[in-house]
Length: 91
Image (spheres, rainbow, N blue to C red):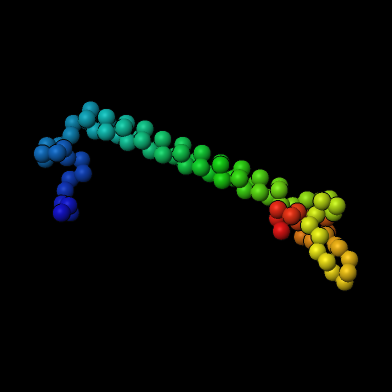
């Protein structure tokens, strides 16, 4: 079971760390966290580009390229707003 009240700055056998040893630990932790943050930024960028790509495939301003629905015997494009229409991928 873990020690609840252990000294986080102490070494394995209870001897306190020197300033030089603590600096090495801090430097290693900083490098590790920078690597983790870089992975997080890369994942966020990939997610953003994927969302932008899906949006660009799903929406068009050209009524001829839009997905059509049958209403009262005529085919009309599916509107999102006055000038935006859904493509077959978006539908």
